[in-house]
Length: 75
Image (cartoon, rainbow, N blue to C red):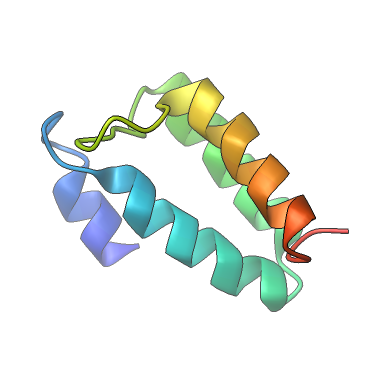
């Protein structure tokens, strides 16, 4: 989260990669509620930026949730 906090200030930085890794770790630890709350707040604040052409903000959250379900991070 320290890396995310530092990088979110720049709209040219890919914060989605940092968040995806963090979310996977936290979900594996059973903290899905914390992850969902964070993703909701970060998307609303437009802090989920992509420098590489992947979806941002609410679209990123939806794509991340689909990926995590498909790969067993979320049930």
